Structures are given as C-alpha cells and as structure tokens.
Length: 193
Image 1 (cartoon, rainbow, N blue to C red):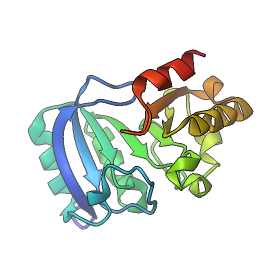
Image 2 (image 1 turned 60 degrees about the vertical axis):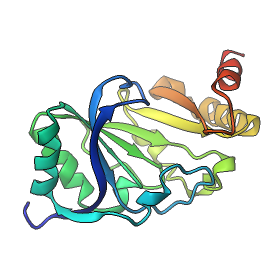
Image 3 (image 1 turned 180 degrees about the vertical axis):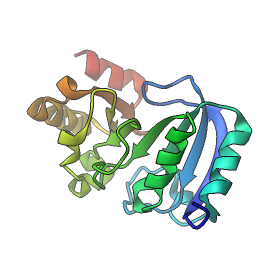
Image 4 (image 1 turned 30 degrees about the vertical axis):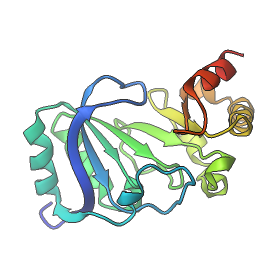
C-alpha cells in the first residue's frame, strides 16, 4: 500500500452540497487530472495541479478530520488507476464512500459498496460524445445519475436519455443548473412541468 500513489489536488472537510448525501459532514478527496474539458467547468485548477501522495498519507489526512463520509471527486478520479485501491481501503476502514465521476470511464471496477454519482454530459458541456454508455447498465439502486443542465436544450436532451433508458427505474436521477447559465428556479419549473 505504501507504494501506491495518487496525484491529489486537495483534501478538505466541508458539508456535502450535492447528491442525495447533501448536508453530511464530508471529507473531499479531490484527485488531479481530467480527460474532459466541459465548457462550464468550475474546477479547472484540478486538471493538473496537485501533489503525489501515498495511500497511507491520504488515509492519514482523511482520518484527521473525523468525518465518516468521504467523497472521492476530481478532476476525474477514475483517470488514475490507484483510485480503486484507495476506495477499497476507505471502505475497509469503515467509511461511507461516494465517487463523483464525469461518466467517461467505466465504473465496472468500482467497489459495489461505493455510492457512484455518475455524470451524463449534456450537449452544452461540449463532452456528450465522451460518455461510457455502458455505465447505464452498471449502475445500482443506491447510485445516482447527474445531469448538469446549461440550457433548455440540455434539459430536453437529458429527459430524452432518461426516458429512452428508463433511468429513473434504475436509480435516482439528479439535475443541477450550470452556474450562471440556468437559474435554479427555471430548472425547478422544467422538472415540475
């Protein structure tokens, strides 16, 4: 385990603001690197910035915050192969673990007990053709799909995907407004309609 390393952008303690785990005290482990370049990305600093850390160093930092929930995010966590052993070790140490992934990598090797929050990139992101569509069949009931919506066109596209693949029968489907592009009020109205 000592020789397993990841490039980590930051590790911090906060309140989860997204997904079905919103409101929980959370340790965020933000990995470096992302293979996508979404037009509205709010974490461009994670594309390259970070420090290489061993798994024991990461686990020690996580433990120092005292929270029992860890969110592995990025960048794109699955772009580094050692993210899988990190999640396995976090689970072994009794943490509730979620993974926020951009959806362009298969989740087939992610431990089953990890709560997977899988983005499906809408057209306005510029990355809708980058999705690993096999993830639609790999999801489990406790996992979540997320659409970040930057326009009405994005929302309509998302609804077509949800209907075509019966996503709401598989797990919870979340919609988030792209900051500054869609108001939460408008998105709520579209969902209610």
